[in-house]
Length: 146
Image 1: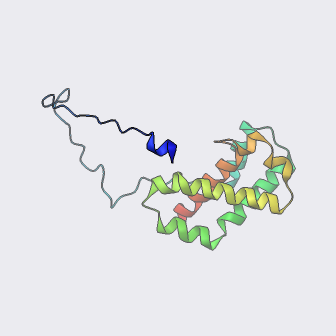
Image 2: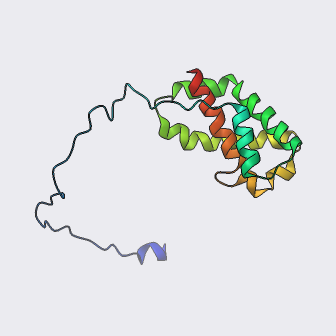
Image 3: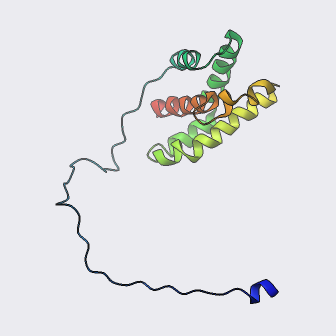
């Protein structure tokens, strides 16, 4: 209570400084910002992603097979498909919070199968790492189906 009583409120003021203008006329871009049209989806196969991961990261054949297995398992998950289809127009959600959630689901799958080495490896867990690539691939596959 002593700290609360010692708290001071400092007031601030806003002062009008006139009308601000931009560097020139605003150009309109016809067709941009339409809610009816989504950007074209990338057609990415699981094999293409495995190849990309093998080029970027030093992984074994066993790891590549396990990445394929988990990715295909998540692509077959009806709950993930339902969520992606429901939010197919909301790319910010899919590429932000939902990608993070899916990344976490992939890590849980690895934990359930006792793949602790991968869970401790930064090339898997970092942003843009293997789990992140897997999550993006799953979302893109579901968007292609939608």
